[in-house]
Length: 124
Length: 230
Image (cartoon, rainbow over all chains, first blue to last red; front, side):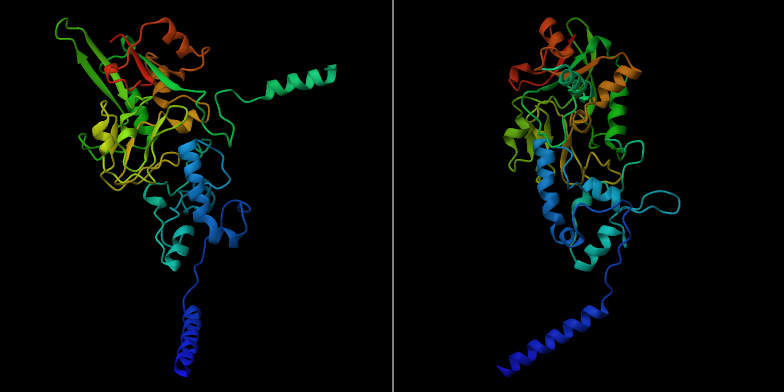
């Protein structure tokens, strides 16, 4: 019993030091204003929001939903020095930096565009 | 109704958005049935403007392998051996009312939207390609390679089936498909897009007045794309 308690305490200590030693993800600042929800909500809920929205939009044809991957990318993609957009799933960029930290692979960008539309097409 | 409310009401009518564009939050409805009417007498054999416009709009950059590269619309040249009469026509997804691709799909990825547009839900497509075999129009393609440079309005990726979406992103915004627009702007305007269920639409009037055919009508799939002159 005592040994088990000691093990738990040691694990907690080890976990604490590991968290301090690991670099937290540093996220590039978003282009737009405030997000559709508070950061804490977005961190936890964004996969569910997008999964619900994708079925509504594709299968039912409902456009203009509050949660939209296209809008996420449009706001969170950063620009390189020459003005071109950097993909959001490139190392150190918004999506990838946090997903690398959490060791979760987002499948969105195997199909979805990783950069916003150029200005000419953005109206669509 | 007094004078003031009458003026307000008339103003409200003026600022209403065009009837074609659906309001945000509204689902596609079975009140509409989108279709195409293609006049082959205006379609010349050497013209590929609709095909090129589609590839540019959808971001279909091939790999130099025409056998397997994605194509949403292709040009077909046909000739009647008895008379020598030759026609050229664009063939894309025919957006059938009873689509064979939807019938055979084991996951429900191949689907028909309420307004008659047949789509692939690539979120649940497993890439089995049953739909490609079932389609009598050879309308669908398979993405064999990893994709890059997708358009934000048209996600596409390796291991999934894809095909003409009737430019659903444009239709939902109140525009017409890019093949129709480019044919009118740069060629002879052989294609007409519209709502087959709206008796006041140009396409419904022409379909009611003129003789039109559907390819392989004997299969009873009731395509939304009709042809004239073949």
